Image (cartoon, rainbow, N blue to C red; front, top):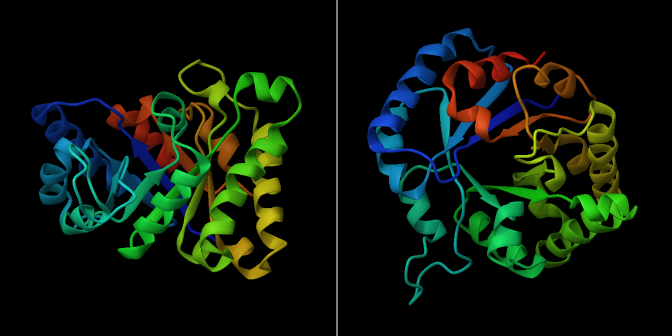
Length: 251
């Protein structure tokens, strides 16, 4: 039985005061969240220190939004996996659609980041997703599996024994649109089935979470699908009450 996972991706939001208040509200609300769901938040890099201190000995795990592919070097402004490990980070998002679109991150670079995260015994959250044009052209499967295969070829199927996959249809992020539960389940099943072609046991245990405009009013229906193991939550994660409601939506 896979343990559900709900991750809040705060993106480029928050001041020290706002982050402190949000974390406090989340911690207060965690008593209402069942034990069958793991919860994590990914603040900005500027707020990792504050979050590490605040979340110490709490049920909320810490995640990071990005990482460099190298452990150190002359890469001004970048943050490495060893640095994240110093802050007790557990999860690291790699390949988010915004990184792919705005910073031209290729499938190959995403694969390098995936391996860099695992080299520090951290857990990558590998994001896969298609654009609206790609969905309309009927090449969703080709795009998703191409992104997945880039990591499989570089890291091998065994690497997915310690990884999370997030399906995030790009057309449903920040647009107010959401893939229907059936549309999301179809892609999650595709991902799991593709991994099963390499290793059935890893495919059965890996958590595949959904990341396209998850909200309190659609979470329960999404999470009820067989291959949807939780959510990567964007805007709704900035509101403690809504994020807690999403966490409580896990059956």
